[in-house]
Length: 577
Ligand SMILES: [Ca+2]
Ligand SMILES: [Ca+2]
Image (cartoon, rainbow, N blue to C red; front, top):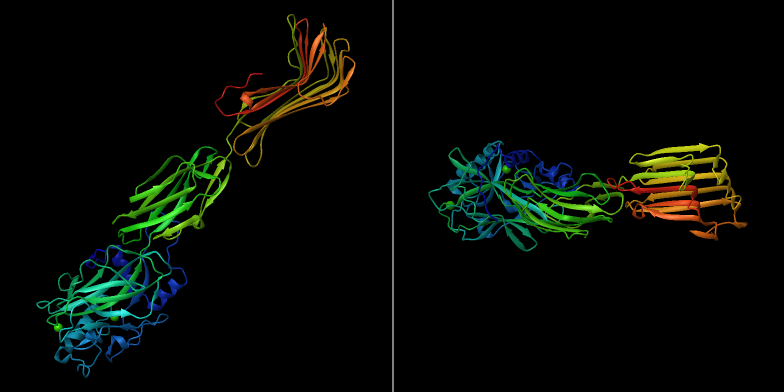
């Protein structure tokens, strides 16, 4: 981790967050974490939110005018944090929580002697720097009236701090001050402890004398925070401060307002468009939104399982995240992503095209993430895939004649002709003579195109013809009803059905009931007669049904009871009759 040694910048986002942090009570912030309310809420992709304070220690709990050594200090509820230190940092004027409130005389045996006034001034300068009261602020001081030796632990937490869950991005900040900069400088290194593993928050130690945010009463002070947060794997952490400076010549410093901030980016999910036709694509966008300090967040990752019914569409994925790897196989349901938010970037996104072969509503929520590291969980996003808007075509008539001499056009026709909008048509006829062929009674026909609540479409045609007599009684019936229907399912597939109902049909003296499809009767030297004739139309997306089809040897073609229906995709030619 790189150390920023940032100068305090109260105009920046982190500055504001830290300023806000300074006025928050320790107990309030930790309660928020334990309630699980510390993580940022989803729902505002691209708009960074403030870091969440996981831990803050101002060394004020129960403090008054009497100085104590830091190992005797207990932090505020509910954590009641306590601290240890190497013995070298608890003697020779080291380890005192001091304040300008303290008596003028150094504590007995402290080793501070005549430096005590300077020790107290460090605490006052830090109080003024943090916007508090210089007269009452307490800070942990170390004036090294002897050599402490290098690389020793100056402070370490005893009670693990709950950070709300594993795999969080954490960063750290501390206020520090130092005097006697002509001597050797304190070199402070802070570590986050993951169990026994010490994760450094710096690459070069903090030296307030070398890089300060300001001077207060001649004392260099600053707020120092990591600019490259750590992806911390544990659910609890400890803190350790090591001073690499072994000399007691100089090395006279103090620190206050130790903070751990959760700067985990927020993951959001969204589908655009939110509604698409079956077979078309919608884009599932994962937005990773930084926290307000906009520090780099390196190596977050997640694995998303698409809801059942959705698959990755051709065209794959795209991202503007840094160092990103997106694995999303076309036709698959798994999306695996790793990436980085570069420093200064408010958000980045990963987009994956998805499609569905069937109509339906699909939701993507936090539970669909089988793996998530370094990201706050998303809310839910929904996408609807709707059936295609198929074109209705439906026609019915009671009968028609074509012949070399004179024909009869369709009787009582009903026609819905290749229209995208639902509608109906109907026709009636009291009766008709077919010249030289016979007669028929009342004819009632209907054609319709309908769309149900789920968007599924149906084209229907039906014709009813009564009191049929053809060819001198060769073909007679009381009533003939024919129906053709084309229906779409939620994938846009079309199925067809046909039906012929006959009441007392007689052909050449024989009674015919429940005829199979294309039942053919040959009357030699007179005619060929097909009952329940079926012809596929529209490439299989439609069906034509003739109840009775007579072809005479003289070349006369008679159809009694015709219905045909189809559903076709827009732009295709209208099916031929
Ligand atoms: Ca303090
Ligand atoms: Ca010293």
